[in-house]
Image 1 (cartoon, one colour):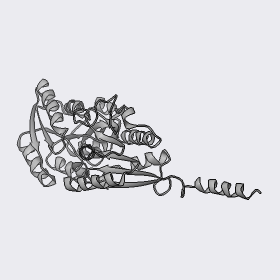
Image 2 (cartoon, one colour):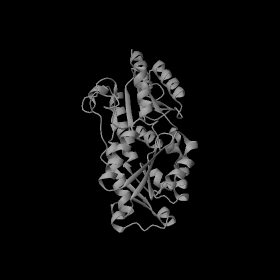
Image 3 (tube, rainbow, N blue to C red):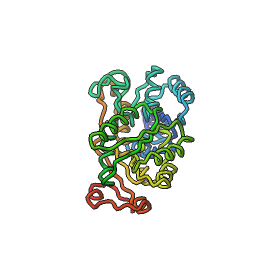
Image 4 (cartoon, one colour):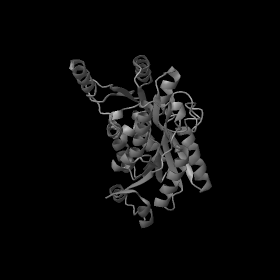
Length: 319
């Protein structure tokens, strides 16, 4: 008489094992080369929330590699596959999903001004199936100029190397230019069209008489940060960048949102979606921690003395 209860108990026990439990399908879409970024921070954040690839979750990592056609093909595949959630990193990836009308919940990160870009209706009420983490990169552009001038008193001409391929960069450039005008600093603009244009861009920046450089990275250039840092050093152009890995890989300075925090918060939003929350009901979040990183090895190679006051403000000093 107890046999049915025994069978039921065995079934419940089996269903409770990772092999037979509901495995969450999580797709991570990056428009560039995700393995050239600290993507492990996102994987670790998801694992800490209980989503372990090959066990409680099936996590796929997709990279557009800077190719719009490849990115669109990946988006078409996601539209067909319909994972439980898509974590979209960088604006091109998010915009490609938006254009394709993908119905899967999307959590984004490393996207500036998602309202202006038409991704969400507002930060507090995103509407639709998109939410995520954003930050005001344009405002940070002015802050980077300020920090660069603090590190290099007397600087009167600054070059900006950037690409229009990243839609936000034009707004960032405008803010830096306006901040420069307010401080009596002339700004030289040099746009790049790809990796092959990097070396000529640095030649032009140096030839313009610039004393320092602001480099606006994007999904492709971030993967070339060592090459870019070497070019800045060989051209004797002290530079400030967006993220700490750029300074760790040889740039003089960086200032921007903390990468680990952005990944953790994106993972937390994905967790809420996977547990039943609607993206439309989850306000877009903004980071609370911004990091200033200074590379003293590079400063020494450039013959610079960074003031103790600026070093005291740094979150990370590389010696």
